[in-house]
Image (tube, rainbow, N blue to C red):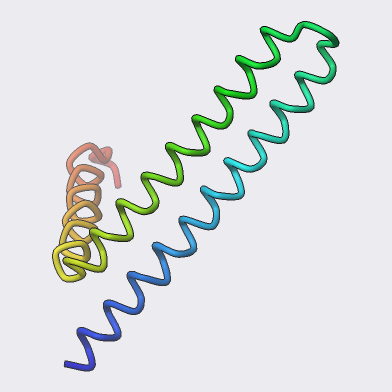
Length: 102
């Protein structure tokens, strides 16, 4: 059982790290959008659309993070199996498409 708990903890930590990166990226996009809007001057309509688009992107990133976090919490072993399968498929494809000289 401790191996499963360690695996769950590891997946949660990776999900948390990924979510922090996404959150920081979204915040950066919002800040860049606001900065760009300020540079555009008084073009209020364009500025509002730009800020709303950046906020929508941040909301979407936040939603995807919460969704992934719920998935990992509900089905940690299935999440690990999906990640392992993806890595395995990547390794298999890499081997198949590798040059014959290697």
